[in-house]
Amino acid sequence: MTERQRQILAAIIEQHAEIAAPVGSVMLAKLFNVSSATIRSEMARLEEMGLIEQPHTSAGRIPTDTGYRFYVNSLNAAHEESPVVLQDRSARAIEARVQTHSNRADRAIRSAVDSLVDLTQNLGIATIGDELYMSGIGNLFSQPEFLQGNHVQAVARLLDNLEPWLREAKPNEPLNVYIGSENPIGKSSGATLIISRFRSPYSDNSYIGVLGPTRQSYAKVMRLVRHAGAMLEEVL
Image 1 (spheres, rainbow, N blue to C red):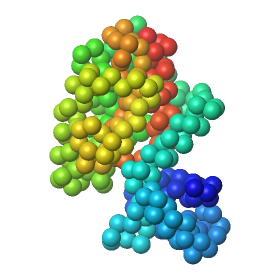
Image 2: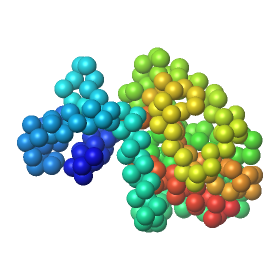
Image 3: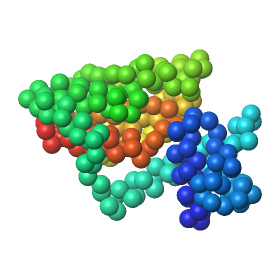
Image 4: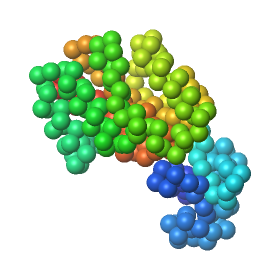
């Protein structure tokens, strides 16, 4: 894949997250300062690679789960090469709420989840001992993707089975991203689970994260979830 194709794929993912609609060649041509024909040619190649697809009702393109996976792997590789310590307003908001409850592990974890809900507009989750704490379910079902009944059922099934699955699977990376069909339950849900493992007084395998549509701002959300996990481990 050429560098320009990488950049176009990233732009499609980021624009799609913002507008919740297929991304057309005219918008990308303006962004890259090239002709629409050049963009259409590059999009055709990305489509051949299985990284984007064309919904039958639109001239624009949306990312596939494979496209999202390629993008997420690129973000993880960039983080490993040059880890970023968050110092922005969002990071400070998480820290402030967690520090307030540093003497109560359960409250600190709930505060971190609530912060993620506010900052990402996703559903927030965390394990507190043997229980799964959830917040922001209204955020999840207000997303345009989840207004259709079949998606709602698949997401509900994913939520119903999430706690036992986390206990059994014990995802072992500091940050785990399960995109759409990669989810072990609710494969057709069109949802992405982003979770960070951290050590807490309850367990060495405690988890905090968010569940949202596959269409989301991965760079921002992955940074915030990773930061929340690291922050909780430090404070607790």
